[in-house]
Length: 446
Image (cartoon, rainbow, N blue to C red):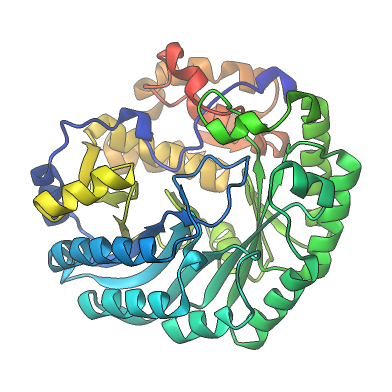
């Protein structure tokens, strides 16, 4: 059943997806969206693009360098962007901040403390909130945790990918397993309220047996959250992936076996399967909000703060403000040039029309909670669901026939197997996706 539906599709961190962004979106469009937004709470995303080493699997926006002075220059430009953007959000309170990359911990301790101080100087921060940062365990000391604590971070996400040494060598990411255990233990001792670990299945030389061993070690590590991503092998788009030998790649059936046993093992160990790639302990905020029907999804993935607008800072970062999306310049040189010329680096974006907002609400509800009450959509948008989505429901029929989706009493419910194919189900409601020529711009769902 899963093989039948294992075709390419978006991950729906937004609707419309980033493919619909264009450069006719202007600074005035963004300012109008800020003015029209009903939110007074803000989530900040800060992109740090630098990495000391190249991981062959990576498709992220990054700059490979060992020269820390390049980060000094980048922070200067970030500061200029912060000074330009912050006054637009003076009536907001920051309740969430996440640093991603690249490798945020590429920065030296003094650079991290300087940048967090600068951000807090210009934005209004709540006394309590979710303040998280991504960590590469290969290039730091345990003392980095003391710096992160001092800077105000209370959540850490550490990239592990796989504990198997052969796999690590194949993707140019060798790391010390004991350091990872020591790092998570110290984070808990220092009072970090949540620890997340990232894994990837489908990497070269992985087998279901070796990946099962990694999962068993992760259970011993006992992070609060887990992200288990499907490796998207797209060497035509990402040059570094050409260093990976096709002969070393696991078969589609092996990948499916890895996914199946990962879900089975982690849920058996007490983790809640949030959806797509994510797992959380039952007492974690993600799990509690999903059970309460209040989970949200944006460019940071599943998130707990639905009412927040999202402001992206730094090269390639994406904002979600009111009824618009806006993305900064994707490459670092144009980013610097834009900051010099305009004080901001807006590159492209899109403003949502009424149909976009209706479909965004439907897709978000399905991807976060695996069910949807048609009557609530009727009431919220003054439509008759079956009439408005007649074409979409026709596309959904194959999922109904295969018992992946059920519609009873105007309630759409996704089966447990359907949870694995949630992206495909959402595609039925994606009017842009119907331009089939775009299909190959996405990764396979499994």
